[in-house]
Length: 111
Image (cartoon, rainbow, N blue to C red; front, side):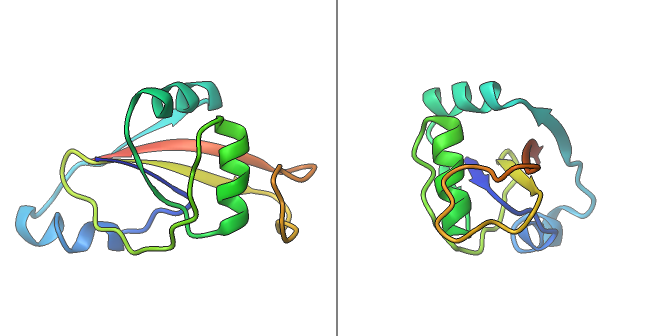
């Protein structure tokens, strides 16, 4: 399954992957915005973006609806998380675009 989220945590691995498999490999790849945009146009995905304003910003950046969906997620082998890692000043409430000096780096986390 493909997920889009604004956070990544080791806790996402604990329930389904680590108890049964012991050591696993995690591949991390950096994507540019256009790569992510094309991917979301062709593949179904589940949003796990837990910040409403970040969901709005990602929707605008990627040209595809990224819903606000604050849930706990347990990844399984074969899943990929496209992690939108925000860096910058605190988002103003109601933001739909990145403030000056901010950036989003997209990282693909694949199990």
